[in-house]
Length: 177
Image (cartoon, rainbow, N blue to C red; front, top):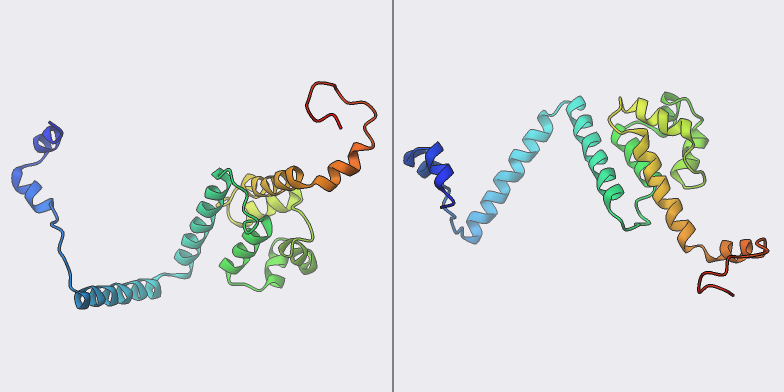
């Protein structure tokens, strides 16, 4: 019997009190419940300290990065630039101030955010340190690695360009053009 372990741990009265019966609500009741939930959420958000808001935001960003890294599919919307921009917005500081906090020029930060430059090693380390180790440097690199892997596998122009530099290829594959 499936419930044998449960019934041996708890009394029948405790089980009866713990059981929640589904209730069908009318449209008006659903609307009222949604309104009450919205009020409760706003109240909770107002009472959050800036530190709590930052911790929650960092956790959310970290989980988003972890999910994307674990996912095998490449998504062009989730680039290093995207996550860096999200990080800066989460801090609620101007880019100039953030650039100063991590010891880089504002124009360099802008180049990272606008995908004109890829992530150098020192930048990943600084981001890790700035986040108090909340977001490891390896996460930033894994996101860049995923971008580069996609570019490498889809860029046929570079394959065509580099093919003329190879004088002799192994005669083992079907790709013998």
